[in-house]
Image (cartoon, rainbow, N blue to C red; front, side):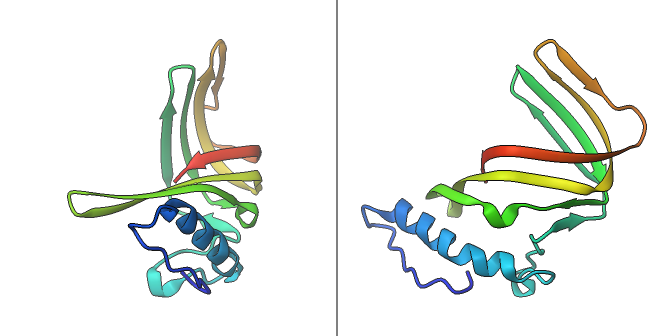
Length: 144
């Protein structure tokens, strides 16, 4: 990671905390490489995060169901991400890194195209056809 001065040792008792702090320290340099991203790692720009090709995502927790297909999307707000926790582990000689993040808001205001089907308990959403939309996600937390 760019500009990261942390060295974390796997056998240390505070390994997860060290990983979280290292990612938090390196994040501003990663996000500030505005339109370039990190080309040496084939990592796209996240300020804003733009994709022009087709993306499809489905989420189903039983109570909340969302199926989204989108194209020409530009998301802003990743610079405000806080890293809450990080955990690294090996399975079958593969390194895994789980990172819990939170951000105050992620905005798509450029007018991407999407087809969204979803439900939250009794409420449903079905945007058949191609829709132009603007989205603001507030107080978002997830695990990468």
